[in-house]
Image 1: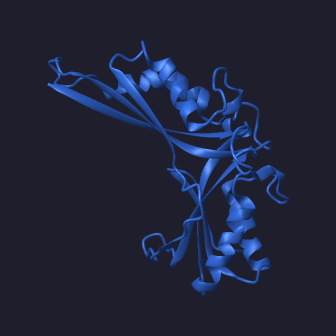
Image 2: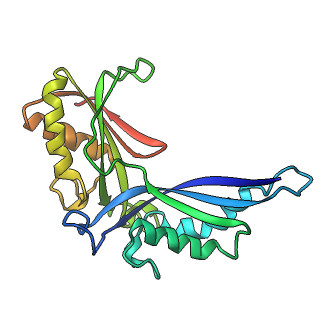
Image 3: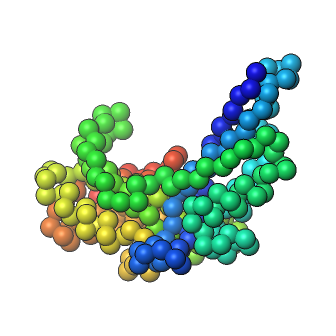
Length: 232
């Protein structure tokens, strides 16, 4: 019985693409997803090809180097594009994880302004809102030495904004996207310490300064962490 196993991981990192377009050549960051594909025959009496924990153990050294890192500084990473990251990981798994046949690397964000309307969510006390994503780098120098977020890294930020006039709100969010996307947030005035909490407040004030008062701002940095801000 031959099967293929797929184990997925996420990491947050900064990079710049020296051979890309103007936007890609700026320092920015992403939330990345890695799918590791392992193929083989099921021969174990346990009824599996291998324990999924074995895939995690094999990938952990790579993940520790990639997560909350500046990819261009990693030895052997090349231009730090998706094919470069894929090959970098693959080179380190072949021979370490038997049956590895491929590694797929993708970006969690849209890499474009693709707004989507979200219905009100009574469970989380969230009104109707518009969601979009942007790609940016950041670092938190206010944190103690050794904290991973103190290092230069990046996220595919997912932002949700609610307002009383959704038709007026969407064009403003496009301008907001252009202000934040493919940037190093610490270089933007007011975002020198760009936690999700401070970014939520900054977006709120930016919208108010643009003539619209939001009802809620949600900033999601990773698959499992987000901040909800209702204003002062």
